[in-house]
Length: 410
Image (cartoon, rainbow, N blue to C red; front, side, top):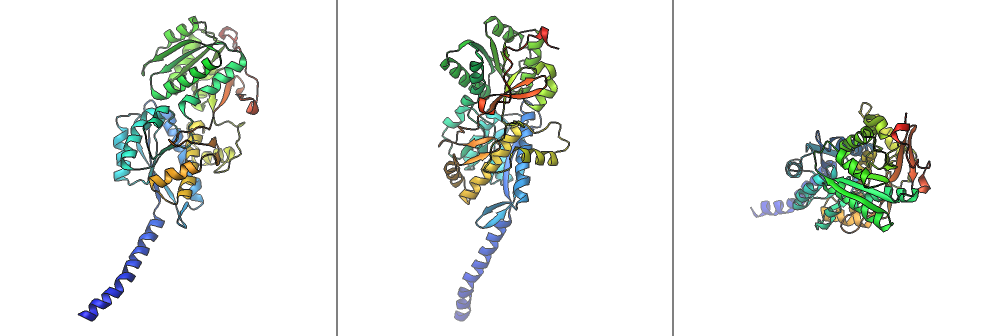
């Protein structure tokens, strides 16, 4: 008995070592599971699905290279996506499912600030790392979240400012603002208003409107009556298509109209002539080419997108690029952290700040995870296509200002 016990004691370390090696090997072979929600319907569906395709472009690229190296072993990436139906009440439950039932290692946010706020509460409670690719509301970074960063989406207070700088350079002195009463449009508009005042421009209107508004004629006429030279209404894409149409139908001739989503492929396709001469913002244009240090460049990303999604209803847009770039940043963070632990990922994310350029531009965050770079370029939809009009270093054409009145357009 004594001899048998002694032999078992000798065998135990070897047995444990064998089991441990098996566990490590199994872990090395296990894919990195990244969870996110995507809206199948509702206000955020178009943008969410565009972002999803961007994430899938990154995953296809990283897996074609064998995966992400952790501890000397490459692990492939697997995307787990569930439907949030553009419903913020549903989001926490869905993210809890991704974490508890789907066992995701880290999470990508849903589209937009409204949904991301509720997702962040769930991921933070679970101690999981959350990567933002679209939410821009500054309020997100005032909640004390420890495990959240914006990989590519610039803060909302900075996002709406490039068109104001462009309008100021054109000579606009009076500008009217209107915005959907939700975190993203409100943050974008407030930042734009602050800069307009700082530049000495007169803000002739500052109006919010409720979700579900379909008739914008009162707001349009109020903006016109205020004496504004430029009208800058901010909402999500579907609402902005309606606003563009109603501005034309009412023959409201502003010298300039800014619609944030006016350069989006689906906006251009559906708005048609309603979108002519509109100023908007984008990070993705064939004439905007960053010298990337991580990931695919613009042309390579578009080529892979077209290969993966030949039957997509719309081509890649800036939401696609933001989500793809977020994947590239995530890959760099994991490599540098050599871990999937949320605290180590956040630490690595901060250390990489200022050291990466992706297809959407420079990555730079503060300690709260707020994105400070990735500033959008201003484009104008001319009858012969989009042109970059601001800032001057990347401009491809001079802006048409004032824009032609509707009576003189074809």
